[in-house]
Length: 392
Ligand SMILES: Cc1cc2nc3c(=O)[nH]c(=O)nc-3n(C[C@H](O)[C@H](O)[C@H](O)COP(=O)(O)OP(=O)(O)OC[C@H]3O[C@@H](n4cnc5c(N)ncnc54)[C@H](O)[C@@H]3O)c2cc1C
View (tube, protein in one colour):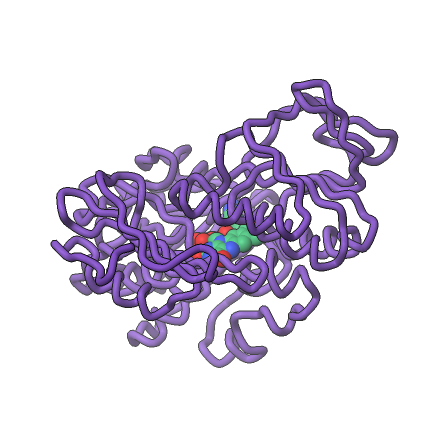
């Protein structure tokens, strides 16, 4: 009997890959394993409508109730894969059992970066990665609640916006000199800092934390400066690390993510990876990249599923990303790390603008605020010698 295709990691990429394999006609045994209790859900909404209470668990579920039965997918929830033998083509579990596979797809995503500070283990300190984290945070961001967010990345800033909407007192502590540094330019960072300050968030830049203190639960955050900030809730949002340890231990090449080719193939035969945990070469940007976004998880999982079935595919996307804060929508096309010129169209005071990043005359990236048409246009021109209309 042929062994199944097994997918480890039942998030966006894993669920999507399972669906794609069936859509492409794979009718063999298919197993999807996830260590969370839930079937795939929209993780991105954890810091948005799910945190605010506008969306329920049912609303953020990515698959219908009959999905697994209808597609004959053996879904194993709350099951953690603890070992991978790439040569024997088997997975291992904590109870000592094993599962053989014909082909394996790793869609294990990321986890929150650990912050090694005194007091980190106190109750009331949480990172937002899973549905239970959001359910823990939600009742604590009420009027009068004192919330300290460590890290001014987009997740921290989204949580800050929702907490302010509930009337909590919010302080964001960011070590760098600007927020959302990984994904956006200084111009965009400045806009969002001003937006948050206008909404009553105390944004502290170039500020480091020394330790957390409290009794059973966190009560204060001590800054390096010695200042003490009172806190009922601390949200750690200091970035993520890829869940690539299974692959590393199995001798598969990893480097801040599982290295895959344009078909999603890792360095081991019949083992693939996609989504947040995968690093691939972008011909467009001339370097290896690892993209943490919904768009990447959706598209790479589809392409990789096709690659697993032997189709000749080539994955080299324009990375795209969206963040929503106070109803303002930031849409990012491309990677803005390398550029020698920027053009700005529109004005921050109108809450509508686009920052275009050029390199040697070519469009490398664009950050569009409340301008989806400009975002779509930029996606079409990334990599081309192209000038936006009406620079101001
Ligand atoms: C709060 C938050 C807000 C976000 N907002 C946005 C946004 O606005 N826009 C955007 O583009 N992106 C956003 N993202 C990022 C986006 O959610 C991810 O890029 C996307 O979920 C990646 O999908 P994935 O399937 O690769 O990984 P994940 O969704 O992380 O799924 C991986 C799954 O694998 C499981 N797993 C890991 N190891 C094992 C194991 N050994 N055994 C079994 N299961 C395992 C994990 O528990 C998890 O369930 C956000 C992320 C978070 C946390």
